[in-house]
Length: 153
Image 1 (cartoon, rainbow, N blue to C red):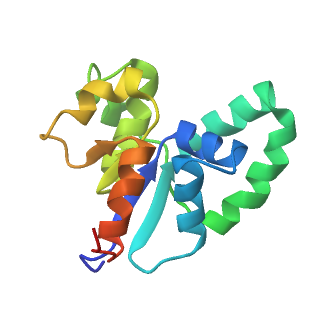
Image 2: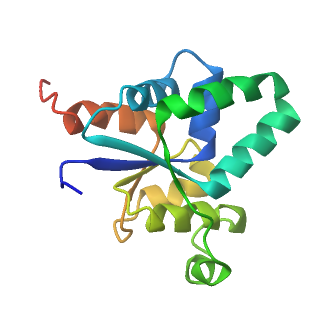
Image 3: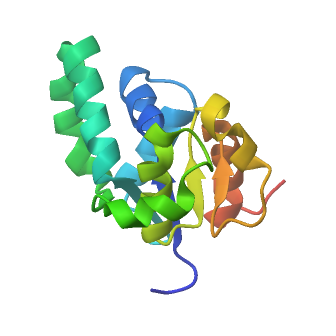
């Protein structure tokens, strides 16, 4: 893979928020991915996909068809569910329910994990010992111009 391609893992909340609002950073991220830019690759985990479908079915069933229609446009690479033994070294890094997302992020060899969950992922945003950077959707959008070659400031 050329070094110029930036791989960005979207947490479930970013995808759901982007689908439900026509404004804001999560929607901008989804729209960027729909452009199929050559130097930006979106990923999420199979675990996240299950979480999204479960949450939409339970809380917002009317949004499920929108998700199913929008998903192919984003062309997300879906990282397979991690094996149980892959989770163990990461237990304790965040709440247990989010460890599969962290392991999927690692397995996806991404540059960025984008999440709106600052409660559970907030401490990870301060760390520099991870193989990826954890950003909020707004932080990623602000960085996206630089990543995509727009160096005007």
